[in-house]
Length: 104
Image 1 (tube, rainbow, N blue to C red):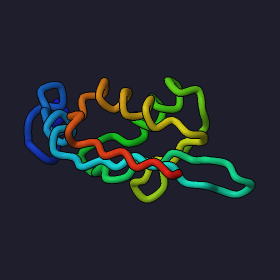
Image 2 (cartoon, helix red, strand yellow):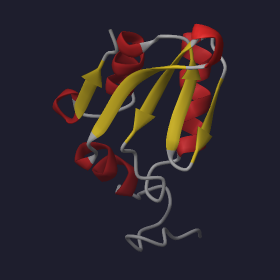
Image 3 (cartoon, rainbow, N blue to C red):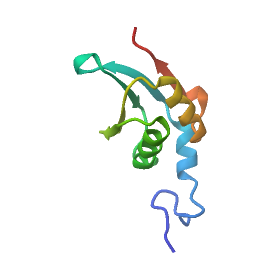
Image 4 (cartoon, rainbow, N blue to C red):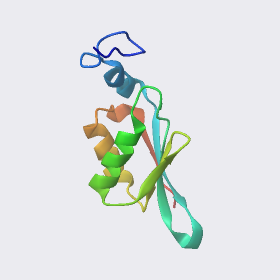
């Protein structure tokens, strides 16, 4: 039987990720890149308790865009602020914990 390193419960009963999604302070912003292209940045996620690889894969699939994860920051190609927020809420994050910063 596989046991969680954080809470000590079996992997199928582990609630660490569910608890971690409620405690996060997430910031979604856009950033101008080379040649005037926009990138959506998602910061404030704890990569120790949340599986960021799965989250990046889900966001890229749902938003039909390219992206990556570097140093705990999710970078998505294009401006997807509203849709990223909706997908994070569907993934179990609290709407109150998500802050949106748009560039003008």
